[in-house]
Length: 389
Image 1 (tube, rainbow, N blue to C red):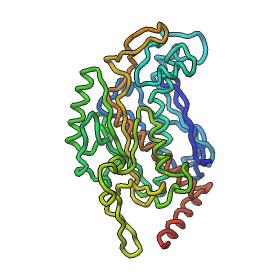
Image 2 (cartoon, helix red, strand yellow; image 1 turned 90 degrees about the horizontal axis):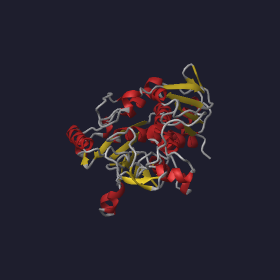
Image 3 (tube, rainbow, N blue to C red; image 1 turned 90 degrees about the vertical axis):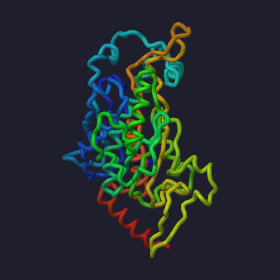
Image 4 (tube, helix red, strand yellow; image 1 turned 180 degrees about the horizontal axis):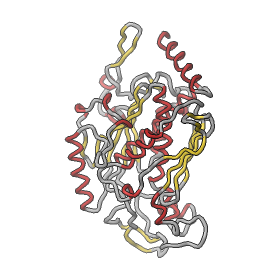
């Protein structure tokens, strides 16, 4: 059983969102400003909707931290929903129901299945929790995990690689210069490091907005400085690539994940795809990283590269044909306030989930109730691995 875990709670238009992160060692210094910066990055992006103009997310830490350092107990995080003041009657925990029930299900969303599974009478009971607003707390948790990893020399960053069929030119990208949390905040940015492609992506988003449509795309998360040997080949559920893929697939609207070259492996022979190894003194290195930093379910010392595809958001301003669950009749799907494109936001959530899985793997391998113990164990292991042949 993992020694690091988290839970989130809260509804999209409820009073607040919360998370509990358990298993961090004591003595980790937390930087609230960096966590808030990631929350701001999740809210930015060309094509985002009106909700982002209302919420200015800020994390409060309610337990597990004293004078800026973790104590070893559960860390409770909270983000207040400003918009709740407009929803106090409709989202009240007690009292008589208020507001019109949502009965027109949206194709591609949790609406209809959740309505039937949980035996509700109002689709709002489903859409409030299934909303991607929940990822606010994943980003907050990920911000804590990124701080833990940063203390060990590991940095997790991301970039958008395709939106609406417009793709970056990989030859223009230097992955070592992708900034992640330290990137400048830009309300109209797309977390894309190919300026020409970004301009064309924005043009596609404008076209979609004018048509009342939505766009999806792909992004990749890169973890630099990851030590060799996280994860294991011993059992299926200890393989780190499987855990990373599952974490990414858990993000709302993600429909596919690949590690490194991923599906490109189907296009060329092994002689062209496997990362050949070379030696320089005691140091083994590779000239390529098609494996994405993972071999046999374990990190191999190269940067970890995870890529994911996000489907277009199901809430369209030109609604699709659907059914009314109350009238049991054809209807156009409901329209909630939504985004035309949120791939840039998903890339920040992807960073958070990769950071959590890597932090979990580090704690599993090196243990330690205190940061001094973790740092000492990592140093001893690194020295041993460098000498091992």
